Image 1: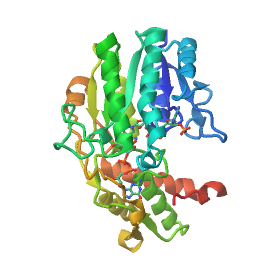
Image 2 (image 1 turned 135 degrees about the vertical axis):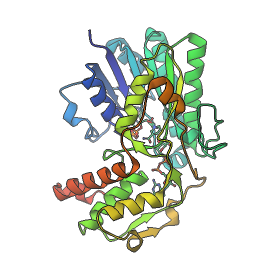
Image 3 (image 1 turned 90 degrees about the vertical axis):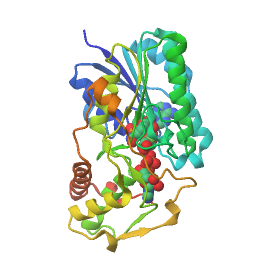
Image 4 (image 1 turned 30 degrees about the vertical axis):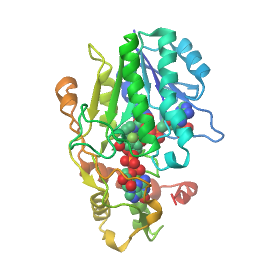
Length: 331
Ligand code: NAP
Ligand code: G4F
């Protein structure tokens, strides 16, 4: 019999790759999406006949309990969140409600419907924030630098607490930045890739960015959803850092992206303080030793391959594009 998985945040970047991954493994896949006034299922439309989509919201416990009772999953992947760091200063309460308390709502619903369900929580390297040591492992103390990071730290601790209090199979995956052509346009990597493609095609003349010195450990989302699944296949639940162990600056990302289309980035990039953050995370670098040794997880896509894939996909998309998408640009 097929295993049953329920994925919250299935319409997001990771949700779409995880759904593809689980379907390829033979799972019966169910996804939860919140109700929106306009359609937001673009990343999963190509899968719509292969899985079941349900409405539900991490702000509404009743919807979560109903969904679990209906679907009876073997595994729950809790990917839903307000995931954009700058918005977490503008909407700190909403971010805490969804990204923080939403985890307790989901865990508690699992506990009461069927506590043998395996649970994955999408934790984040943002919890390390102002890093206490480098690289960061499962043992590195947290020092979050944004309301988002604080909410994720809460989500991490409540996951560990439900595991230890109730004996649930609950794992927290501390994932470093992972990107793809499906990344939201407001995140720096996609913003750069999309702008490079637009500039190359003569649709734009400049790219305005914030802190070019920020450094991240960037990998490909397709590699990272594999790690999520691996965590739920072990004999015992645990927490894992997932990253490449390589760090690059925003400036390096920009250089490689412009270089790829034969342009000199210095002619197009303008630093705009509007994109600086109230408190910055200067650098993040994973120590993924535990994931490699216990899960056998290693990333397959290199940094340069990731940058080039993202630029190429935006070039293709824009060159064959419907007029509406050509107007989409982040301020
Ligand atoms: P994403 O593209 O922003 O997707 C987030 C998903 O959550 C979307 O489907 C969104 O739906 C949904 N959502 C938001 N609020 C909700 C609510 N109240 N109830 C139900 N669903 C809600 O994020 P991602 O990059 O795929 O990341 C997946 C998860 O991993 C997130 O929890 C993120 O914080 C975490 N994470 C990401 C990274 C990374 O580098 N990508 C690293 C570490 C951790 P809408 O489409 O309606 O907005
Ligand atoms: O792409 P970003 O917005 O991602 P950030 O803040 O690292 O958060 C992402 O990764 C986390 C994992 O560590 C996730 F948990 C979280 O959900 C999200 O997926 O910004 C990356 C860096 C920052 O230091 C930012 O200051 O890029 C810098 N940056 C420079 N100019 C910019 C810009 N970021 C954005 N979004 N836009 C800019 O114009």
